[in-house]
Image (cartoon, rainbow, N blue to C red; front, side):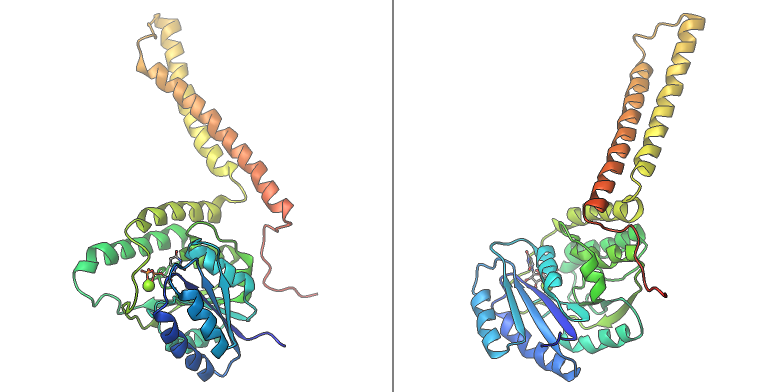
Length: 319
Ligand code: UDP
Ligand code: MG
């Protein structure tokens, strides 16, 4: 059997009520595109009847594939499991909770046909719900999008929208950890992909509850730090740690020189001077940072050479 053209990857965590509606909408929408497809549902350790529901749906619709995790590993892991299994030329991700509209998929495909490697949904009308979500959802979301965009240089209005399409090579080439699923377009930019956005429909949740609270704000900030570092310095850690190290070491050294000078020339007493402590602190910090950079250089070599992972990405080759 030949590979399907599209792979839809859907993380599922306690979404028993949504699932039949989801498949009921998704399958006709996909059939309308005229392409062959597979739907990979990853049950992320649901405690409700999601798995039984998926099993039933698979009997009705054999193009549904189901992966069941042993426990809840998180949305990122669910996406990763789907990406590993995806066979389609184009991989589309979406949520199981009906918040993404399957009828937007053709829009994503049209954009992909223009030659983009990643097309991200942008939930334009997302904020019509009223004031309460303003503080807990809108503000954090806007801040996160702005932070991630400026931090990674990949400007998207809506990193949080799960409805996204990727060319297969893109998702096959990246490894996800932590909560990095939100950053896939930014991580992929490391390989020089082209990214576009299309406005998509947004619906509020009908069944079940959101799996995230405000705690994700902190996690997003920490993840951003990781991604930012990986994008800029993952193959040359000494250049960031070393630079910081040289600066602190240099400052400490100059202060030390000054103190030595006034001690030797003017006979000043140093024991009571906080500056002496500062100088020692800065010099030690500098040495540690430089050492850390050197260790980082070793780690980078192990990372790339142990998996034969090149430090470049080729678009095409002639001859
Ligand atoms: N999800 C998951 N594992 C988790 C949390 C969420 O697979 O640990 C799935 C969930 O079932 C849904 C999607 O990820 O399909 C997005 O979750 P949710 O709707 O709760 O996030 P929100 O829309 O509130 O950002
Ligand atoms: Mg949702």
